[in-house]
Amino acid sequence: MELPWLQLLAKPCRLLLHALSSGPAGTLAALRALQRLQAQEGPGHAFPWRSFVGALCAEEPTLDGPDGALAVKPRLLLLPILCQRNLFSLLHAVAAMVPTDCLHQLLHAAEQDPQPDPWVHALGVLLLRGEERSSPPPPALTASCQRQIKCLCQKIAQSKAEGRRKLKWCFSKQNGDVADSVLPGGKRKKALEESLELSEEREGKRPLLEDVMFELQEGLDGTAGVGEEVSGETSGDGSARSPAGAALGSPQQDAGKEPRRISGLEVAVEVQSFIQMHGPRLKMLLLQEVNRTEPSIPPELHILNSCSPSQLEGLCSFLQLSTCPEQLLVQFCSWLLALTPDLSYASAAVLAEQLFLARVLSLAQPPSRHLMAALTSFCSKYSEPFCQVLVAPILQEPGQGAEQTKLVCDLVEECLEADYVRMVLGQVLAVPLTEKLLPVVLAVLGRQEPLPSELFDLLVLTLCQQAAAFGTSLSYAKLVTAVLTTYGSQLSPSHRSRLAAALDGSNAALRRSMQAVLGR
Image (cartoon, rainbow, N blue to C red; front, side):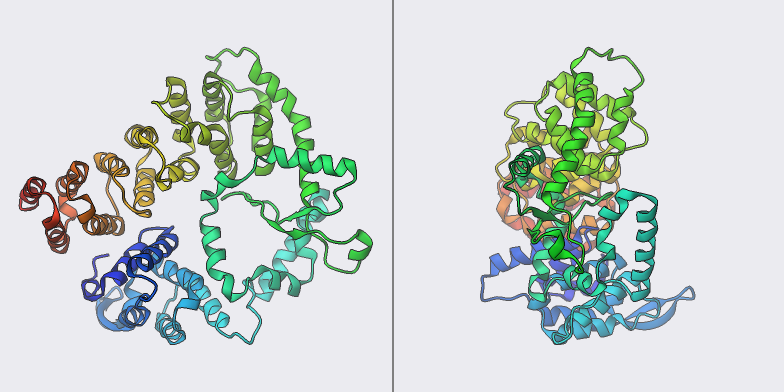
């Protein structure tokens, strides 16, 4: 963000604003920035919310409208819309840490926008109502919207028998649903952070097939009187099943009450039935000799387009795709490449985890030719779930070795398109920068793709903040030189002055070479 008044803010406030402006994951980046600041400053030093909010609510002259008329607006309204949305989402997570008068100041400043962003407005309304401790938490949907959704679900349930079971939440009492759907204020931060990091927490899940067999065995033995509840399935952006207690009582006891949720046993039976129906044919298909030059894909593979993420995860476990020979992996990925229509994001994420995650995290030597071919093939079509499921754990796990980092660099240099190269850079800047991650940033800059101003600002800010830690690092010197030479046209005078000040603590020889480039 090129806003002159940013230079007047304290360093923690500038860092938080840059994190909020880093992209769609800016809320999570800001949460991590707050955690790092708290760790650096110690428990006795809280984030300066009053000065931060005061700076955002201060009025600033600006040119408004197509005619360029001079107007005075709160600085909050001069921030990019995405930054405003991320800010209000962050406030929901850390509301307990923010003084109440600061929240009201920001809400009052947001109300001065003559054409408010609907998302920012909705977040503000929920935040304001959430501060009224004596009243129940507000519903996320209006009464009219709830009626429309209920009507739509009823039509779906009438047209398809299975629909009523999957949409039974819609037919329960509205008051109970609303109350259950909103967490108490003390749990807001944890809930938001868990929802933002949903795609990053897949490593800790047990294989679904093990759950299926265990729960089925309990049901057959008559010992499964109580089953775990699951919140249901998400389709499109991701998939998750989370325990929500126990499904208590019998059908007679539940009469007249809201319908119970789908138990873990029911889900297990559904997944096991799906595997019994389609698993053997697919396993036979994978075991038999296949002409690798055959352009068409087997018709059995089209079942991947119609199964849920939980069914797909169970099917992958049944087929043992995580440990299958790498030659077979290449063949399977070539089929996925030709499969139409494309898989959903959730299904592609399940496949990325099942096919590659364990193989990549266990690499102790360069990947084989077959594994690299399979990775490149899958990544070329499903880049976003690939980056979220596979690249993110490599960047965030400090114990990963050089082979994993080298693999990410190779994918950045040879496979990923420009949008996902920028995504990888955002993922790197969202975690503490280490020597291991410097080659990844160098690979991104080597692509010479245009960087949005917010992302470039965050890159320069990170390099300045970490300069002292890399005073003798040759990779860091190469990285700074690459920024100066490749993106010299984007360097503002403030960027140059920050870099010049940050380089003072570097090794003398490295400092002279970098300052020579900086002075050009």
